[in-house]
Image (tube, rainbow, N blue to C red):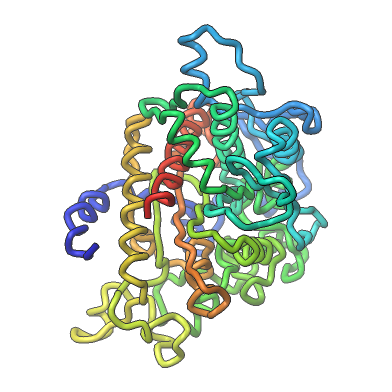
Length: 466
Ligand SMILES: [Zn+2]
């Protein structure tokens, strides 16, 4: 498929007015912080979480003896007067213990389809990261095999973006429940998927890592401090609470060293100041959390798609994140040193009317990214009526070291024979009633869950087709 044939569609999906702050507010992009009171309040009681959906207390899955079920199966059951099993509670957000307990519950309920696993690198606070492998049926004796998984879903890399783990887990719960009980469909708001499509999605093999930043999320839940980064203090200054932590979504490898890899930009994509919300860390993949995602990309040999859940901008983003794309010159790529200090300027006319850097992407990968992102955005819009827009990530603001581009970087850096296409979904909108605008209200939490269910289903659909 030629790019030209996609142009009308591309324009349609990029012509949205809705460029909300996404993961980073304007104040934070300029080096500030939205809750400046944290400087004085590190050891104070938790900040307010009024007007937000609260964090769950205890363990609704009772250490994996009960299992979650999403909201996609509920509409059918209601029309049939059926009592469904499994826990569906939308009134609170899953706490850290519950996220693990939910995966153990899924493994227990769907033992031939779900395998809980742990990742090798422990966090600074010694937490073990974990995930689940999910598919139609795991062949006997192949529980330990990582072959046959096409799609990797992750959430909560930014601690304060509450809800991502819940939506990821509840979505796969819906697939598994509908498959086991042969529900005729699953339904998210205005969008339904027949059982045949559910089973096709499961047949692709799905890996979920729903809690990429466990230390940050634990801290955020206990303090309501709108915490974004991890909690590694090794670069921090005592008495400077914001100097703790690395922005994990600036710590991946692609153009990590932005002061060398990119041209000087008025507003750099990241920072080497530990007090910044976009502190990139001390080296690419310096953090155990990003090492674990890199490990997952290396360890599941059949992955072709990756999706990272963020909030809040009602956007679907595809790569590259640091410059516009081109398909004709593979040598014009992010590892070629002759282009150091030249990348990242958009539009290119600012360098020279006749020359500019654009990042190489194979035509088929670019086409697939545009098509997948467009389907995800348009069907998320159909589910609730809130408008989602698909754009290239660099149109929002240039980023370095981001997760979405890491799977493509691995191929160019010859760490892999295949490229992993990436998308980021920025679900939901700002909660203007809350001290931290990233914490959804109960109503927003429900809308986000519906929309993300559709977004993940559309990604799986695209992964099967493209
Ligand atoms: Zn984010």
